[in-house]
Image (cartoon, rainbow, N blue to C red; front, side):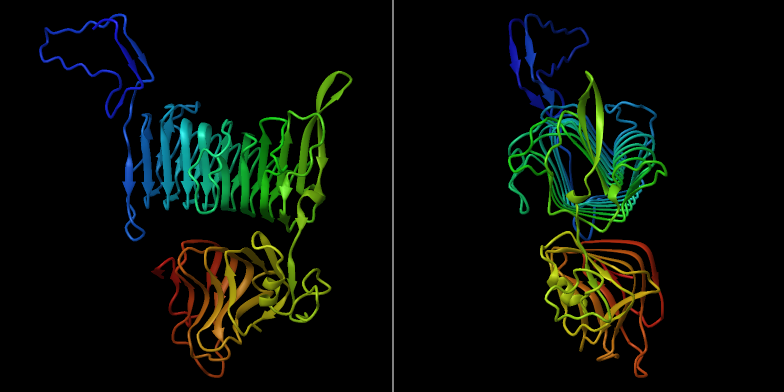
Amino acid sequence: MNSCSFSSVCDVYDGGIVPSLNSPLASLTVSNTSFVGCCRARNVECTGTADNKKQPGRQNITDNGTNSFTWCEWSESKATGKGETYSDGTSNGGAIFMFGQSSATVSVSHCAFKGCVAYYAGGGISCYSIKSVEIVNNTFNACASETWIGGGVFVFTISTCVRISGCEFQNCMARERGGGLNLNNFNVSGTGCIPAANDNGESACVFDCNFTFCSVVNTVGGGMRCYGIPIAFKMRSIQFISCSTAANGGGLCFRPEKTEKPDDGFYCYFLFFHECKCRTTSTPYGHDVYYLDYYSSHLHSNPFYECYTTNSNDKRICYVYNYSSSGSWAYQHTEKKDWLKDKTIYVSVSGNDNLESCGANESNPCLTVKKAFEMCEIQISLAITLMEGNHQSEVAPIEIGEKKISVIGKGKDKSLIGTGALSSVGILFSVSTGHLGLLHMKVDCNSSANPSSPSVVVVSDGSGSLSLEDVVITTSKTGGYVMSSSVFVVVLSQLSMVGVEIKDTNITRLQFCETEL
């Protein structure tokens, strides 16, 4: 073969040419021939159903191709090699590892990753130097990076599209950076992703995700770390609940790649932080957020749009930027408490729903939880604080809809919420596509209006999600009745529970995520 040219030739097995020599004496001589952009292009596809998830085993993908995983699951899948480079397929990506092909894409949706571990990067998923990554509507539970980065997911050097959306990261851990999610150095712009229901095809985004009890042992980004992010990058509708790190950014650490700001000036929209912290006893930099702007020699404007926290500490956010002093460079640390807004609506058994601004502070609380939801000024990323007492005065279901709301009590022995005065089948919360968090409280599944009737605390059309933390679920006998059936949760797409106790034999039916327990 002489003076030939092969350009962008890809095949399932080999790119360019595949010689087939039928005799041991046969030979092929190739001279003055070029191969440009040739590759193997093997497509991996795993498709299960909501009721029957596939278990494909650990995936080590180093070929070009279109790779898709839908309704699949991995349990305790591990990458146990001891390599310490991102290209090592034995030590990165406990369940899925992808590396090094310019045309390779991966889509992971409606999948579950439980207890997956990588020695180096990406306890659940590791994607390095490929074209496109879309990780949508998945759960990562107790996944970990043993020595380095990205407890749940690690994404590095992507050329076209990075979309992380609708994911739950629960109890994920990394040794050094990004307890739940770590995104690194991807140079994308414009609208590289195919538009989805909740975005316009942004080429780099993290939307509608929850990080609960994620942590980093040593350094930064207990929930999420985004390093070297492009101007096009957006974060929207994300909750960080009880995430932590030993050093900086208990909830979030991020650093833009360039000095320019986005057109509207914002990277972060509708973020919510609750009880995130830096565990250091010396100088904590950003219990909620650690924002690094290494390339700027001046203080940028606020990059947060309608972002909220329940943390009143002055060190809840730390902004770091370069400044010149006597010809040498150093870093200026500035606490910017006002960049994250205080936002919680207070509810008390002695409150008053008729006050024009009820719930704005502890001195003027609302009386009912339903009224508190009405007082929420935006649809996502807010908190409602239950003061001590028995909150069972609701008379109609509370519609969550598409909102992301956390209802936070003062303790499971101090704040009680229940179906109370609800008549007939008592439905307390109705969630459609939103998320409800119930934290630090007792939940009573009993309707005093009709105590022999079953009660439902949370009902959903199947796409809503719920998280429970430090909660006691119980029932009470009223008027001599013993409830024959008490349903706590009905049909949820995602559920996380931490420190949940179930008491009383009256609770005879619990239904979680279409599965009766």
